[in-house]
Image (cartoon, rainbow, N blue to C red):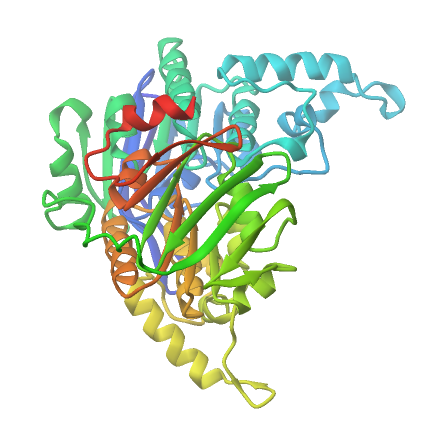
Length: 495
């Protein structure tokens, strides 16, 4: 066996993150760790990868004692870890990011770098994982999925025997996910051992040989992937049967005569969006499909005032709308859940309470009303099902999925008229997804207008009332109703 952990235990303050967790990663196999948000998946992977030291328990690596003191220590032992959150340094170029922990290997005397050699090796690492990224591309031109691919290339560049991927496909579109899964299969065929965490059971069942299920920090069981069905995995993860379906039934779509909350007329934003006309009505969930760079994020940037319109105009509730900045958009009743929660959605060092109310802090006269903020946060924590030790807990103490719930709570706290959702369930487990989908559908039924952009095609189809497909900055196809639409119907217009 490559990597064996027995009875691992880890506690952060009052929060028990992992208790009596045992896992065996067999040599040359792919092993998935699954469970709800807060189940201990990432904590377990971080202990295996040296990022977190267990409070108790034992590990062995290739039959020798293994107790890494750091990520660097684990890497030297042949275990590489790719984190869930993006860790790219935007002040460095692509090659420097790939070799950020090993730059000395490419340094000549007097500190002069062997940049051509470093770029060649970096390009080989990118080519190995099958992504179309040139090492000469500016880091600022890359989207989230491409940044995650650079991190995977960074891990593979150390030639590890064991590769640990913590939600590494969460930021990728379907083509990039397929590329990563292909890389996992190729590395497995070369004898590499791979452990990964994913909330997408389709990925787990497509790639994993073995899987371990955790619940509430406890070990539930380990299985051969061929021996357990998807429904049983769901039941063991969440403690209830989810066979009734993931997506809530659609209500009657709003009438064509229903008032448009937002109308964008021939708008062009940045280099990605080129003069499209689009509107969303009260009580409607409008889905935006498209590959990264197709225009959805640019449209959101224009709506919230993050980028100026190059062309066209917008109306909000029938009145001309010219947001000067995101703060103005929030004041106009437009809430935005961004695709990168770590850098754009919340402040990890702030408390759950402060993050939930930061978009519109309750005040008593000129002063912050702490008692009202506490009541608001208590209600939102219950409504959205945020798993936390309390409203005063720092957001960094939460699992990735619960951080996502905090960002959604911040959006709902302002009582918006229009809600922009960019991958709202990224990094969220299947049980919590069902709850979030129900909440989104409920808010639409109450009259909230919602624009949903997602790289999860089943989510986009299952949640949208109407679907618009963007390709290269223009509308390639509109489906007046998403009812009965299949994935291939959408994908053919995306590419």
